[in-house]
Length: 390
Image 1 (cartoon, rainbow, N blue to C red):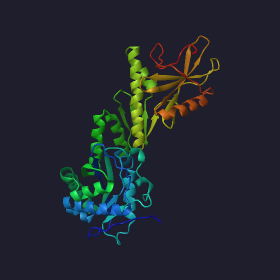
Image 2: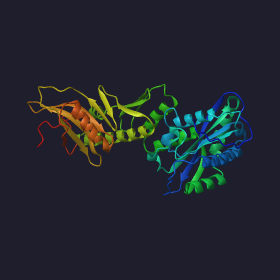
Image 3: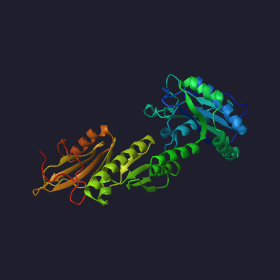
């Protein structure tokens, strides 16, 4: 049986009929060098907080008393909340709708019991727990006749006067054992806008363009270019990137510049992959024969030709980035390299599995020949040595 913990606070009952969800958050900006060790609140704590939140919101917009307030006693990072389908809010709303309206009034809180939240999507991930802002998701389930007007009023009031009340902020600091710079209410649209600005500030506006499409218009495709010019597109719940080797082939300039540009493109791809994964999106190579694994991408360009030597694996390296690519290549009688595939480790732990996958794919030893540099051919393409390495 689902373990729900409702808390009754307001006196007005939600009217019969369909309810529309108005998602929001209570955003906690921690003081410098502060970290909350807690990922969730107990059921009793969530109920106490919900009562304080209800009081704050009622002072801002009295009409919220005609809606059902539902709160999750769990602290998330923005990347956990801003995912396609908004699974945290979707779960929160679903649980709240299961509570019989004829038996409860209008504040429902969900907290942890024996260390577990009542549904998996409401469990924050420890990997994202060290950020300077922690977010408690909440939602107002309003009658359709009220939802549009209430949403507009909340947007205006939260922007202008959305700071949490003193009692609420004090309770949070005592409960979590941290000092707060700010505690304020944001609508989900406010959170989207804030995150957009943050990504634009660190030159990741194209990434946000893809994320926004995945969250708000998942039925439509979206194309863009990264800051370095990698072609990117969103379609069918996935993000596709031009391969760094293909991108390199379209560049011009001196060879030394190409080495630096390729390393930069792979670094950018690693940034995108990590953030997309955090937001619940998979990254794939937009190539003729792509392959993907945990933390790595690869593309096959040709099959093994028995007229050449057995395939070998070569590691392209860049200062500060380590191995940026692995090339599988064969040497012919004239010593010319024949490239079969490129692989791109996006995480340090992915290098071993990538090497093993490529060795198995091309039936060769998993010995990795370190080049100590990025190897380009005479036309500036990613390649391999034309002579044997000793």
